[in-house]
Length: 279
Image (cartoon, rainbow, N blue to C red; front, top):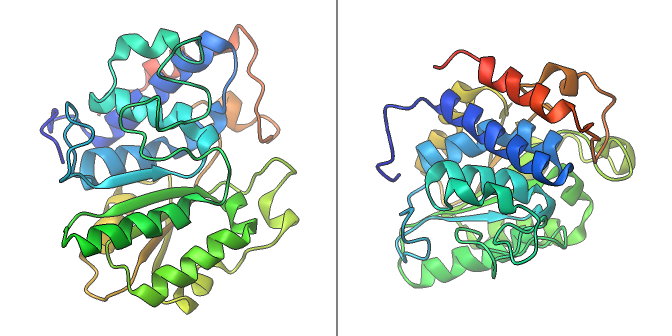
């Protein structure tokens, strides 16, 4: 993990990630903000507890790779990369604009720290398997993390990659599933029920854990167990998250894949985040 203010708590990092995401959403008046708020705790633990990287050298060979399979979650990853110092905070105002390094869907060619282009859902885990295999061949000790969505569990390519990773014994691969039970067509489990999810991954020879994805302490413990697990297995952390987390009026709003936020509500949401006690 980089030396970028170890005295700042993970909860405070998550609060700042939420704030950065809200500021970007306000620029365009839209964005997948409910998902970004929901996954902020996962990103905080990823970037400020687990990952090895150099903020000023995003292509450093000795880094852990963090793959964002869910391309439309880019607003969330940008917020984490801004908090981590990989992207300057003054680029927030460019979000989604012409010639911006922060397009509304994540693209590796545009953004420092964006390892893959994940706009076509269901491909991220397969790419991560390839990266993990490549690092194995180079005798690297680095990890590959892959954040993907519960909706991507509908894709056969995800399960082909899962079976491959288990078969190859990729102990340098850590999958992270954001289970918010919402995809474009409605609640994920009502489209194609993937439960029980933990035993499915275990059957594919993964070391599997399931945690509250908005509980920082539980996430820290899960990431530590994933990194230190002694078996020659890929590892999966299944994270149950709440869309809109941290902004009660968005948490309470009727759940939708693309949550509408009115023009006057962005500042209201920021005021709520700013009123949180610093931890």
